[in-house]
Length: 264
Image: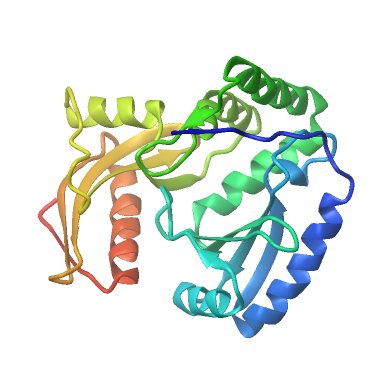
């Protein structure tokens, strides 16, 4: 199955659409709301983009936000490859994606650092735009979907995104389920594997980023029927990263009301 990607020139109305939804989301979330940001390519003046407004909501309680947004008509897409990042969409009257996180989530710094650097550096913005347009030109029939329903287009932009993020000085931690070639190769190297078994849907292959580099890997099993989670293996070459990684996995399992066990 192929998916065509529609990238259009920058639209000066995108910030206005963001503002409308920002006001709506503040009303919906009420006291659970902390901050709301316009992120993604539509938030960068002059940058071509898919005509979808990406909005990041920082909240106090993820579960409460999930229930509230579903009741308000937003469609839940769960987490995709980002633990503790709830993802929602709405297609009318405008197409929007809502990314909901707690204030300790590394995706906040990741998105804002990248956005701000592109806003302030036209050369980086234009390099990113060229990457998008070249990908579309090279794939006129569209892009396939990965196992986690991420378009190959999204994955293939990764190299230039990491390059720009490094130029911007991004150095925070990020906690992800592996989903692109860089993460898969880093995971295999850290775990000393030739291949990764993606067949068991209860097994999660996880990476911890520090800046744009993968610094640790872990394999965890989430058994939702037994309400248990277990870290099968964790590899952290530098000890200072281990507590950060373990705390993120504990936080994630707690979100799903799973009792986490680990001998690591």
